[in-house]
Image (tube, rainbow, N blue to C red; front, side, top):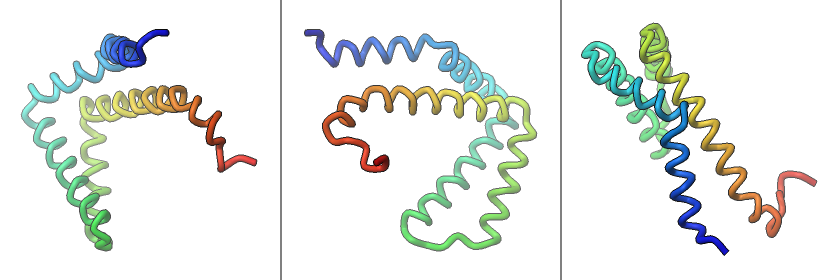
Length: 117
């Protein structure tokens, strides 16, 4: 029987070598080298983090904050590199979600999928 940790490390290496991951990494490097894009992305991510922290604390986000977040999102989406980065992040997120679903299938065999009857 193979060691599950060895397989996990093999999966990590495969993911790190994938086109999706290398593309994402390249976009991060390009944005880091672009002062405007880097600042825009950092500001957007900071705002996202602040709003998420409020939500986790049970604090209602104001309409003004929601509008500001939407405006920031629209602004960063207009920057070509940031837009490409967000698309690449989404593609990699889908892959990771798919992998998670695959590796948890044995648990579903034991516990079943309570959402489907």
